[in-house]
Amino acid sequence: MENFTLTSDLNLDNVVALSDRLAKLDKSADQKQLAEAIGNATLVQIAAVSNHGERIAGSAERAVAAWLNTVMPVTLDAQWYAVEYRDKSDIAKALAPHKKDIFTAWNSSNPSTKYARVRVYGEELAEPAIRELIEAEQSEEVREYYYDQFGLLSPEEQAAGAQMKDEETQTSRTRDLYERSVVEIGKLYRALTASDNDAIIKAHAKRAQITAALEHLTKALTALDAPTEDEDLAAFMKEVAKR
View (tube, rainbow, N blue to C red):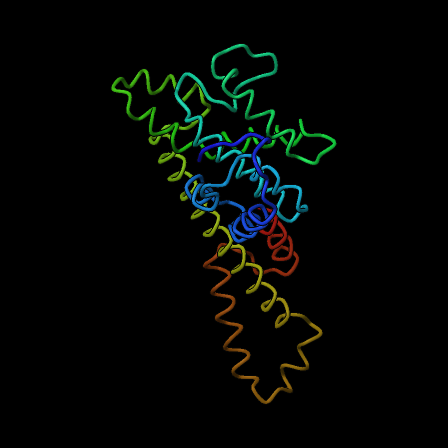
């Protein structure tokens, strides 16, 4: 991705074509996908895409970040998106002309806000590369240091977190099934035992079957450790539903 300054010919057809390619990407497109969509587009052309409406603005800003990640690859000691205002470091000096081109290409009354988002996108898109650099370090202590510095979870911590989440999900599903059993069986049981329905059940053609079903419902509630007295059951159902 060779960069051309604003003195280059800003071909509108190229900008529109790039806009179309970016519009086809998912909003969560990664560094590789964005780089492929960008192709040989210039930084000025990429930045200019965001002038084509809100529909494409987000993808265009992510594309700017992807371009900078490609031209200025991250290291463990320096990242373009970490450069702050008035920074005099070497990477800040290298970034300055690119930032100037971006701000000039944007038709925006608040380019600083747009650039702040670009920095966030840059850090997000660069995370896999940062992780590779950290994992390449031989010392476990060094790896732990950099994971902490970048605010990232180590692979071990990610695995532990995923396992904990799975366990919590399983517990939640188990609790939800119990809640559903108590509430739904309880509702049917209360309906069949309601005094208002006594006469209806006695006169029903399927009285024997309903009575047999009620016996099974009583056993089911007992198996669920639920009370069968109406007021107690109603209170228990409410309590279970709040868990």
